[in-house]
Length: 153
Image 1 (cartoon, rainbow, N blue to C red):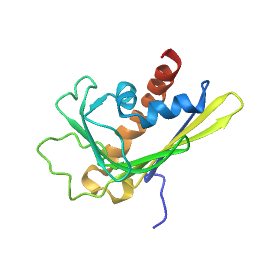
Image 2: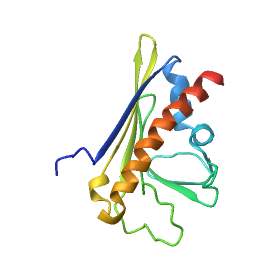
Image 3: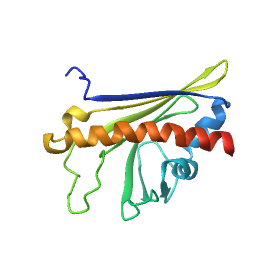
Image 4: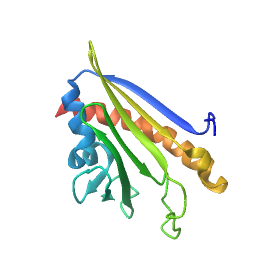
């Protein structure tokens, strides 16, 4: 199945900090939660599910669940999740998940970070557009959050 413009979100930023610093902010569950807005119970381990309470204002009643897919130190961290799964009366477990990838590359001025989320075309039609819209805006906000996190800490 070919990707469409509604299947993929891609965001990019160059962070003026070493790749090792950006990697810690992404791959360490505690640090990830600080800038992302969640407090995870444990560590991110490839092949496991990580859960944490959402700390983002207005969403504190939710638990975030990510299925850690791949960890390639200082290059790639990826997970699957149910995008914009905010209705606590809905069981999202039978829905397909999207794939979120954090790609790091060392560049002259610091670290290039690319965040890619794919798989929206497989989300049920009744919630696909809203999930895409909310995550499109959400990832733009998260770029600002991670930049602030890695440069102020």
